[in-house]
Image (cartoon, rainbow, N blue to C red; front, top):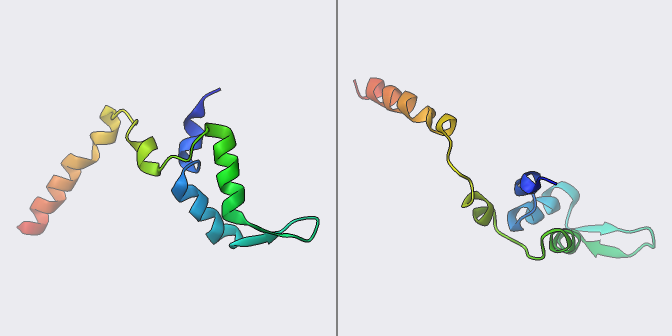
Length: 83
């Protein structure tokens, strides 16, 4: 299985994002209030064994040529703005 899809949400920042999407607490089928953050933390721990930061994921990205193409355009735009 390819784990790269987890880089999008399986980190501390992704867990905090859950609260903005689902509120800080949900009510389960038994009527108990459960903190959404706790659910996210448990899920990520079960999947990864730890809760990484987004920086932990991003640090492992290997830059590719297509990722660098935007910079020459930015330099050209900045040159035009300065003129």
